[in-house]
Length: 118
Image (tube, rainbow, N blue to C red; front, side, top):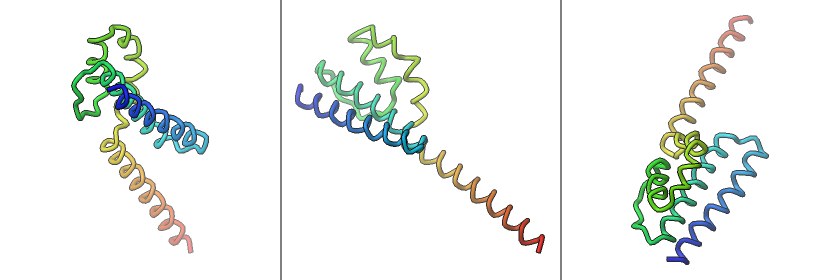
C-alpha cells in the first residue's frame, strides 16, 4: 500500500510541476485542470496510505469527505478545493470547446464586417 500511495504522490508532484509551467506560460485553463488533478491524486494517495478502498471517482468533494472521516483536519482545506471542482476533464473539455467556438464566431463576424467595407 505504501508503494502505491507513493506512486500517486509522485504523479501529483509531476502534475504540480506541469501546473506551474502552465502558469508561467499563461496557459491558465491547463493550470486549473492540473491543479484539480494534483488535489485528486493527493487525496487518493492519502486514502490508499490509510488502506481505504480505492474508488474510481474524480469528485474532490467525495474524496475530501472520505479523507475527513479518517482525519477531521481535512475539513480545513474544503474552501481551497471548491474552486477546483469544475476543472475535471469532461467539464473542462466542454468549456474549452464552447470558448473556442465563441472566439471563432467572433473572428468570422469581424472578417465579414471587414469584407463589407471593401
